Length: 386
Ligand code: GAF
Image (cartoon, rainbow, N blue to C red):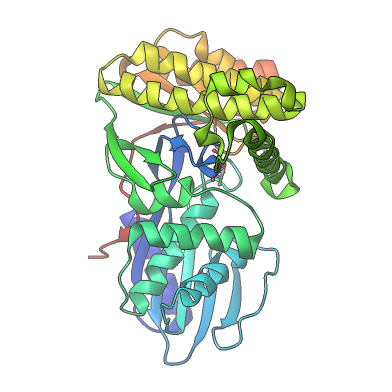
């Protein structure tokens, strides 16, 4: 990462002619707790070593100039006359600038050069990583503090209101607040979190199905709408409830007839997933990796059958991993409709498991899977260039 940061700094000097500071924000893998964040529930992600870097330096005017090394494109934006979304990568950059300014944080103009090693659209939060790293860079350029939780909320807002994706706060939160060696148990209602150490004998194995998800295609927003519909219908029986966080499985079963089958399934996933997150946290803390794995496997089944956000390729990868010695549990991670699985694997078995997964996936699905052994990293911050 430091070598890449130096290369990006050189590119920056070449393009813009002055020395940058370097901000970094990571992607994430979610161990468990899918589509619970926007239901005020619990999630347990870890920040990754894969990250987005933003080299930045202030300008004397109020213009933003952003160069993406990945796209090899430059875009400009005037903070004095903010334009709307263009439906492309720069929306994540300028959307964040707009929300920071709307929150009362007055920014300088800035030159930015952006690079990432996160696979795009693979469910590892490349969007949150660019938002949070840009927020860090713009705040640093303006000599303003980076308050991780409020900034994560503003980045979520940029994605909700500027990009048009109604995501929850999980990805931005862990990208801003991640802690090396730990997953975070985040309460998405109180916005408090606690560290959950990943034992040294465990590895998080991420397998990319190379099937691309389609959040923007509306499936994600449709799931969110179904959850809101569930709350509205359940409130008739349960009184004023704010979110599915306020519903128990017993409440749900008792009111099954009030909900269309589809909405019932969506709600059952969210309500049961919240319980599984807390069980997985308990299990990880007490060294009961088998119980943690069981919760992960059940989470996958619930996403597949009740929430219907998996696809045959990720179902294949999860099932293949679940059947292997040394794997405690495996599930799809992220928003869904493709992307990656995450498996909790005994360290001594991780290479063998990786190889089998790649081979089985090639034979079973005729596709290439990439596998990454991941270590939980720290959240956003400055990268030292010396
Ligand atoms: C995406 C969203 F951005 C998150 O907020 C979360 O809802 C996740 O899908 C599903 O758990 O990553």
